[in-house]
Length: 105
Image 1 (cartoon, rainbow, N blue to C red):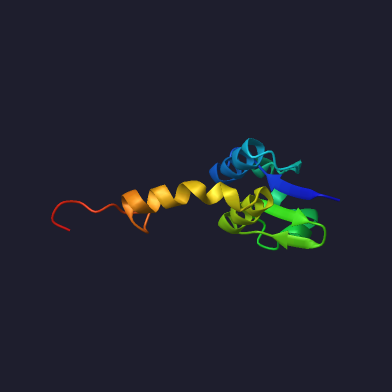
Image 2 (tube, rainbow, N blue to C red):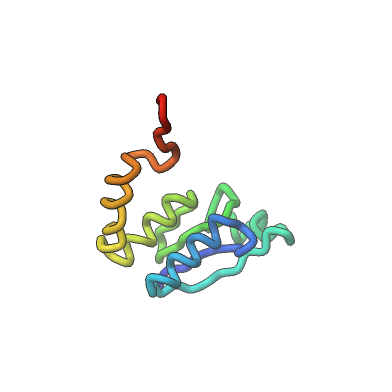
């Protein structure tokens, strides 16, 4: 059994994870969870993610539910080389991607 990603592509974090995995040729099984139909609130999905949120990752008996953790774990499947661009980002903007310095600050 390989990597399973539980996603609804209406969700932005799910789309980001889906695009990342496809772009980097990470093999996974797409498990569609329809949020609008409440499929994330079923007992079956609760076994995958007790928080009943997407995205969720399942790899054998290991499950992960937090979207940033899922993205980071998936990226490790790709290898360490995916972070090459981070050095350029830090050089230009500093360690924080959320806030850039402006004049007077």
